Amino acid sequence: MKFRPLHDRVLIRRVEQEEKTAGGIIIPDTAKEKPQEGEVVAVGSGTREEGKLVPLDVKPGDRVLFGKWSGSEVKIDGEELLIMKESDILGVVG
Image (cartoon, rainbow, N blue to C red; front, side):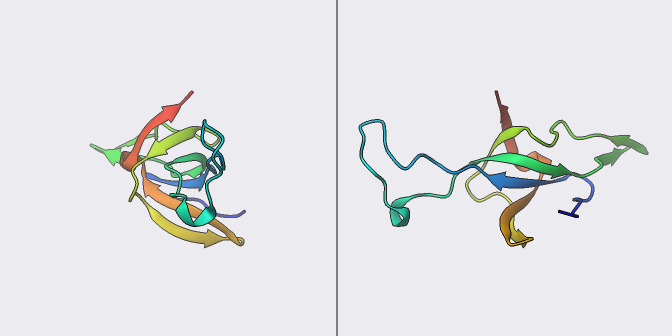
């Protein structure tokens, strides 16, 4: 994939949820919510503060949590991904 986000933006691939609950109930596709967890695919160069470049805290490969309505959905090379600002990321998992 030849895509690089600009400035403080991050490209994220959603991580799929389990298809069963802890009790063993299978969740149909129509009842599933879109996951709020994903893997960072690419990051921008960072933001400029007082003339200095401040790099982002996340890096490709990090698993992150983000808000339910965060980011913009895009399709790159046939894959559905999210682009969002680093500030929309709630935290890094693990």
